Image (tube, rainbow, N blue to C red; front, side):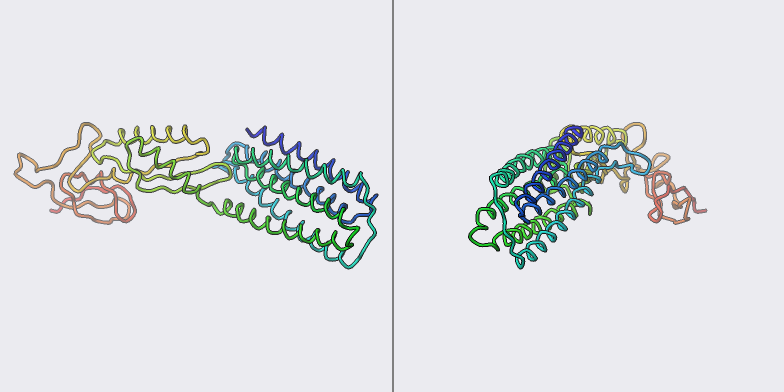
Length: 348
């Protein structure tokens, strides 16, 4: 999967390199500022494709001590950098269009110039569709961002192409089209920036994904009382809170949750980590779940002559005291203050 994304990014770099050189060359020959600007803009595409390539390459690195959850955010960071490039490019195009508006130049339109711009629009549209298609399939923010950039290039090339036809009727049309294209790119950069920023800020995987998780859990006959998800690049981390029969032993509950984890990761490939918390497998007021056998309720000791051991339970760490619960050993209780195990202390 990662190799496929890298291949697409490298092909995009080579195509943009050829298009950039061709547009700059014909722009100089035709003395068209908009064509030269579009050639430089294509040069910026090379930068975004390179950013996309390295973002994808870093994201597939295995986990290590410093990055125990992987490097998946590398793709998101790459998408964010591409957004910055788009934003700066849009400002540059708008500025160039405004300055050209007050400086009228004679443009020599040739069939070669028109052909290069038409070919640029078609090739960029094909690349945009390929990048966005595979970006969505592989949940690659970097590839989607690069595809959006290629889609913008289609409008830029089409706008310059139209301007070359209309410039003979009105000299300012070339610069106005450039300004309009710059504004369009600026708007697109804001939308793309919002998407990448959400991912960097650990946005949820969305209601649709969480609903899939909920249905899979319910299919296993388990009640889901809480769910939290976190999207980390193309991967998702999930924290689930489930309710199980409190009469289950710890090893039984562990087997159920392990089976559920395997079911979820097998059905949802993007789900990388799953933490399952059991909300009802607690020590109850008068019910003790021993390590062997079924649970039992204390009714007294020595033939029912007493109500059980008197005294209180004391935390071995912080010294917090709590009333002893009938039928529940102190060593099975946790301190309400620090969470450590309690110990028995008799009243004499």
